Length: 315
Picture 1 (tube, one colour):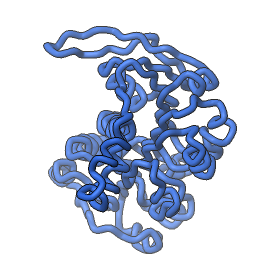
Picture 2: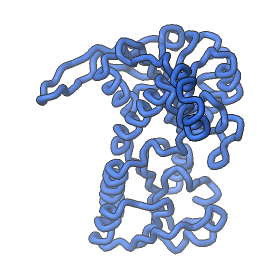
Picture 3: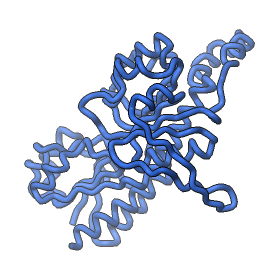
């Protein structure tokens, strides 16, 4: 058995596969060359960069399994693969905490203007220090504020737990059931159940001080012109889910008008070449799709993915 880990795999996961007698190739094959070269493998693992579409699946009838290191599988034609007898596995739980922590990296960044200060301090810090100090003197605290979470799966719940731990109020919207409370572990191992309020989209938009998206790719943006018209003036928006879930034109217009005070973006419409006006916008905090990119998450993903592949190939 031979697996191509085209977007890499944690060394522990690689060793687990090798100990099970599975050869692992971690050399990246460019997307345009995969159709010609993937026939040498029994399976492929990907993250968000490599696409496994119908044409690639058709070109590689030898494939037995496709593994996705992470949650979203919009880069894989899942149902088509299954219809061809190819198993598709992902690791939805392994990266949830890492993504949720990145959400709050962007939130803290936004409410204290760190994103802008980091741009201006190297240029103006030694000549306009006091002016900059005044500019950034109107930060706010997260405690007591309301965060609206769109999409309440594993990552949405982890985001809510951090928010509740900080003393924030949580509004949650999802097409599926939402628990009335979430278990929260306090210092000393004390566990309490903290309430979560399920709301419709309109209530979330109008009552949230901050909005965080945790949904898979959608054909139509979830936040567009109409939605931005409904939000609170000065709302902060964070997207660590998928590009395309926010209308980027509408977001820029809302940032320019002040309707949205800042945006924290880890994902973009046109990855890996996001639009320049968004990257250079003075009210945007930026990261290059690194939600799951912590050492701990990658180890968990590698181990979980390896065990899934081993179990499938053994059967």
